[in-house]
Image 1 (cartoon, rainbow, N blue to C red):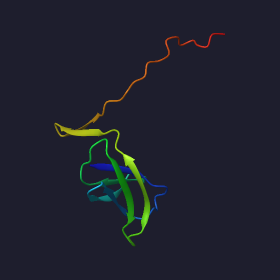
Image 2 (tube, rainbow, N blue to C red):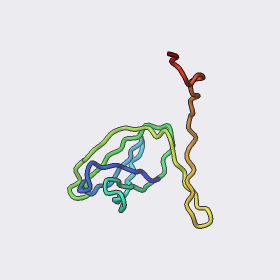
Image 3 (cartoon, one colour):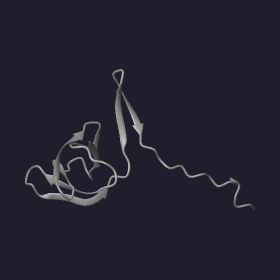
Image 4 (cartoon, one colour):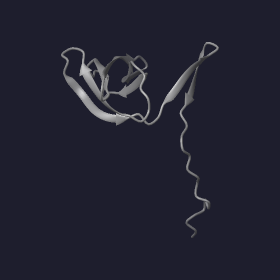
Length: 107
């Protein structure tokens, strides 16, 4: 699984990510994205939507906790290889209907 993280500045310390479930903890190695200095990509074990997961960013240099929180995965972006190219297939989303009368409110 790839986890994309936005950091506050390009000089943010190097870190790794741990994701904990009720039973296990998994380490995700992280690398800065070359073209976007405030984005970091972390790769590790796949997780599935629905469960509440505990995320912790840990400094590589001194092992201190940089950030942590609990999140539930509510959506996924699936990628597949197609004839040497990468094709992204977004997870289904809910589309709300527009208001039936676009000129509302009437003058």
